[in-house]
Length: 64
Image (tube, rainbow, N blue to C red; front, side):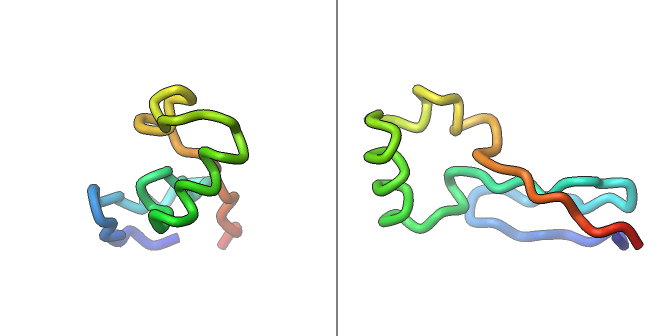
């Protein structure tokens, strides 16, 4: 993947050529989806799961 800048609501991510996964953070989700995820895990705050710091998922990027 060529190096480029991905703009997010709260941060910018540099996509490096050697980047293997695309991280998805709690803050990337729409507010309604955030509420649904918290409800599904029976928690009140993303900090409980460290989702305020770590990605909730990582999607493998295709090899070029």
